[in-house]
Image 1 (tube, rainbow, N blue to C red):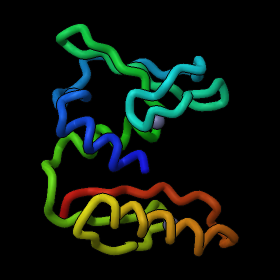
Image 2 (image 1 turned 30 degrees about the horizontal axis):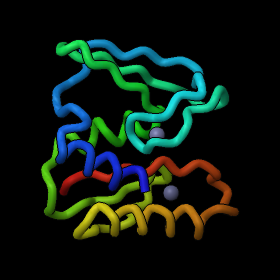
Image 3 (image 1 turned 90 degrees about the horizontal axis):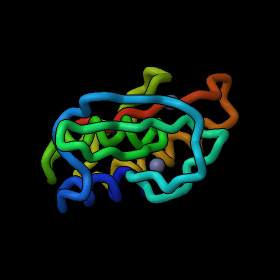
Image 4 (image 1 turned 180 degrees about the horizontal axis):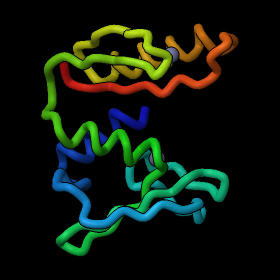
Length: 124
Ligand SMILES: [Zn+2]
Ligand SMILES: [Zn+2]
């Protein structure tokens, strides 16, 4: 569950909350993602985020996007889950619930005419 992992890393300070000063995108180099911890493979898009304090982090593009969303919010509260297919998926009390909704949405519509579902989880 990458969103939960990234939220935890934000709350413990392992990942920064400030904005990156520079972002580079490229192909993965078999390096672990600073977000989800899984390897960023050559077939994945890798984002390198540089910070003013000279820290730098490598992320999957999706994990960089999650980080960007999650750093804006604090723990708790309601999460709104929406999809690029314009269907509003619903609300969740916790991030884990929001992720469950997301997976369910993708599973149900896997064979639909819209193959791509880019899901956004945001604070209401
Ligand atoms: Zn990742
Ligand atoms: Zn969708």
